[in-house]
Image (cartoon, rainbow, N blue to C red; front, side, top):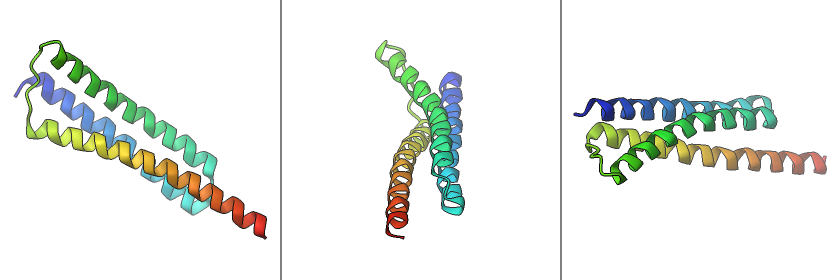
Length: 111
């Protein structure tokens, strides 16, 4: 397999996995301490990692569109799975934080 594709695939996995872990940690911490602002900040930080993964994916797609062959492999497919999962987890975490905040506001208003 092409060494560049291996390196890009591994970086895609690294940044996607780090971002996903940060996002999950943000929600877990929020559920423990109720700090919505901290959760949003940590999700944003995780989003930066996921953004780096997106940049790698975009570079690979651009290279292929420019006629440079990108070898398809199980490793690249695995890397793409990590990236897409990270995106979905980030989006769901944002919704969960928003929902938590609204439910908390409602509960306080009723008290």
